[in-house]
Image (cartoon, rainbow, N blue to C red):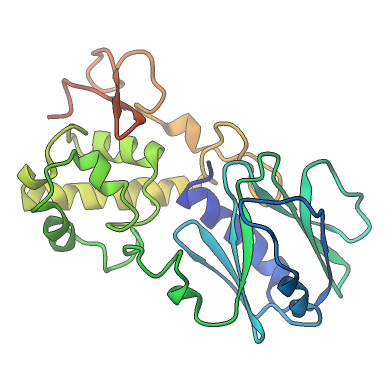
Length: 269
């Protein structure tokens, strides 16, 4: 599933191609995505894309008439194509612009969705209760300490909770905890403010590196230009069935919160 760095990479890739462009027509495959694509989306014909923003894993296309909230699901991707490029298999949404470009949404598994929100997208029920962005000033050690102090669950589970902080998916949680040498099983309430400060810094550093390298290609993700992300080459523990790159001990794989978790028991305490 595309995580925050992949979605941010997509936003940055699409932004110069869609911002300021006027929608000429919208074509739908008619197949149901996670939610049915409503006919109300056709109200945006003739509208101009003012801005392309991201909140958590949601892309938000802003127009004067409303906002398209787009989620890529498990296998979704957005591409810019010439307007006369033929449609491909699993292409479910096509937005043609008056400048001759076309935004194509392909989603083989159909777990993604696109919704029209007339009001403030930040108040939509899918977005309103989300925690702060991990790269924002609002995500800091004191905030995380407050979130952790009454929680007996594992720290990895806490930082993957989108109501605590958004966008720290399984890959980046494993890598961040390894980077700051915290065992993912550690009870959140027992971690000191000093160690949480290191964790916050590791999360920010790991996500920033992933964005710079275009995300992580594991199964379906590619960037908006069709190129793969390269952060996979920098992974230290996630998916590592061998030895720790720091100490040489065997990397362990366990299950936490129903998710596979990799860590080094020697380095991470």
